[in-house]
Every structure is written in structure tokens, then in C-alpha cells.
Image (cartoon, rainbow, N blue to C red; front, top):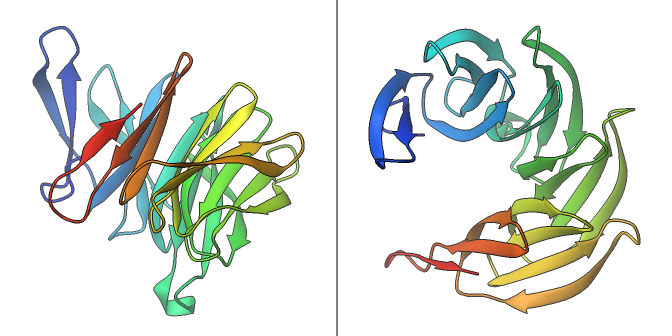
Length: 219
């Protein structure tokens, strides 16, 4: 996503060159994929753009309200976190979008400042940056079933097999959560200001924003 240009870029993985640029909404941040679409959160206009990856055009603009930020997809469900400053500094929600119809379902209120989201067909995990917690939502009922305290200012979240990984930006750590026991089983120091996390095979990758002097990547 390119927030300043209000676009999304497609990069060819073979040549590592930009092959397409698609205009979306205002201040695009989050991006996720379902089998037939790309979904982009537009923070400043309260929408999510649905992009057809074949035609590389926006095919639907979904109004979710607030300031949508994180997005994750699993199956036919797209999960979007958003916050609403008008309702208070930590007020926010998680909205479920039905991917085939691009329609909005029920919004789940979370008052700890929802930030990022990760999803499978069986679990949806949402970090709460102001509540220093991660919450589990049951996608079958759209209800919060668990909340665990992690580090300070949690941001990124990823799911890997039997673990949930949460990066805590304000104390430079990563929490490994056991979703079965619903508890933090390990806390690792990684750097000044970790923001993002991704999983590939047996490796967990952490992006570290540093203190404004550039960033780094940890494995």
C-alpha cells in the first residue's frame, strides 16, 4: 500500500519490479487476500477496497466506519479492525465482511484500541494496543471468547501452527501465546520498536521500526 499516493502497487516476484498501480481510498494501510480478491483498508475515509487481481481494478468499496486499519482474511470472511476517536481514544471494533457479496456483517466492539488482526477458519486474533492485550474471536459466533495480557502496546499478530505471535511495540518484545491454554508461554526481547510479524515455515519474522532512525528485520 502507498498511503501518500492513495494507491496499491503490484510487484512481479520474478523481476521485483512494479507492474501495476491501482488507485484506492484515502490513506490505505492494511492489505489481505482471499482466493478471488485483494482487500485494502482506507483509514481516512472509513472504507475497504475490494480489488480484482486479474483486472487490477477496484470492484467494490465497502463502508465500515471509523478508521479501518488492520485486515485479515480466511475462507469467505474478511476481518477489519477500526478505531473511532470520536467515541474515545481507545474505542474500536472488528467488522466481518462477507467476501463473495462484499457486504458488512456484525461489528464486534473492542474498547482496548484494536490494531492488527490475524485469522484462520477457527480463530480470529486481535491486538489491543491500549489494553496491552490480545483477544480471540470465535468466527462461528462472532463473539470474544478470550483475552490475554501480553506486552506493552501490542501491534502485529500472526498465527503459526499451535502458536500465536504478538509483537509489543512499546517494550520491544514478542509474546508467544498458547491458544489452547490461552496464556503467554514465552516473551522474547527483539529490539526497540517491533511493529509487524509474519510466519514462513518454521521461521517467524519481526520488523523493527527502531526510533525513527531506520528499521531492521529479525528472524
